Image (tube, rainbow, N blue to C red; front, side, top):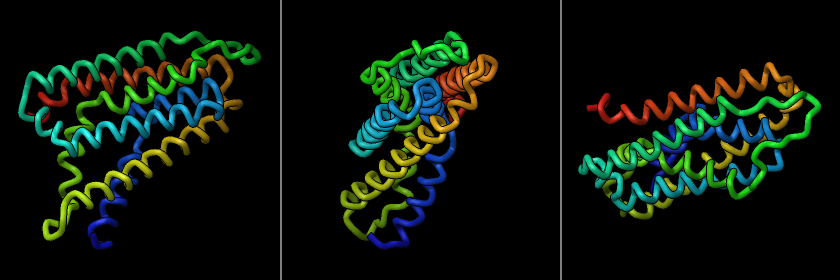
Length: 208
């Protein structure tokens, strides 16, 4: 693979992962709530979720979903419902006093699972990878080695991006511990997650 094929993909991927979405919102939410000690758990969940979605796409699942309305609809509604559930949960999260101990979710496995599900259960991601990656493949060389390089590149960028967001949010944690700011952060993040879920539910219809 030439640099002329890899570099545009790397630049496009870096821009894509930097745009805040449901995954970033979840990472930031946990970092604000628990600090940097759970940054690795959320980052690992994001990385595995991206790996799942991208690998499934490369194995042809994205093509199957695009061709089968029933399969696509099932996965679409599962992912959308989960995003909406997380948004409602975040919106209704209790607000702790500025000096109160943190009593919210602290189970590393649960936090990892949330980050993984938000990233992997988004059918738009699977369809996106199917449409996105082939644009950068050189048709004159073997496709599989290129796909492996592209997937590794995207996963590395997505992982670094999620970890960076988590560290920044954890560093700003003390500045946003007031109940008023917590409520604003929770309700803004919750609203965006609900909106992302609703968008995922109607995305296929809008794109048609």
